[in-house]
Length: 210
Image (cartoon, rainbow, N blue to C red; front, side, top):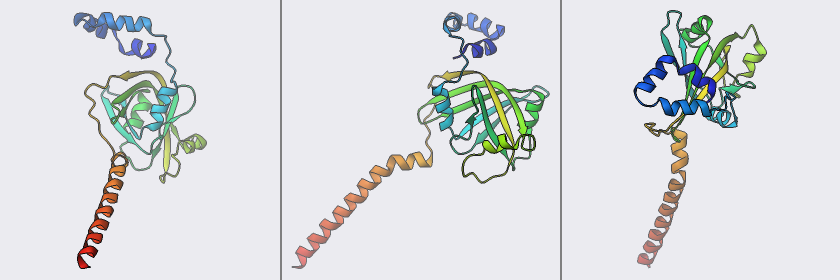
């Protein structure tokens, strides 16, 4: 957990509640022991590169929180150097709630899940919208390879802090591809056994016919 994440989200009210309920001492040690680094390391970047979806939190002009699910091929959320991430926004979603929210308030949060391995990463940062007419090279660079869709804009996020959460209560969930890969060896073995059984039955049948 990076120092800026603690300083940003551990408000005075949160610290008072931690003290009231007995957890303040451990969190105070965590704040003191932090190296103060908010830099995304290879661990975070590798995790982000493997994700095919995440949840994006933003705030309306009236102060209401809004959460949107974003999905695409693995790696569609791309590192842009340093603590900057970006992804392309395509033609199709006509509500424009997240886009409008970032125009009013750049603060965002991202929640990334790895259900099979029961891991999750939370990011906070400042986001901005880049229209394709404003910077076509940047928006085009955010396009996933081989992805057929029309980009309208890019979301660029400067990460200010992050936190890895514990695996408690994360129910493992698997995609169809992951399940197919897991059962493929068993399916191959089953087919082999079926072939061997068929050969044995054919041999037995030939003996009986003699």
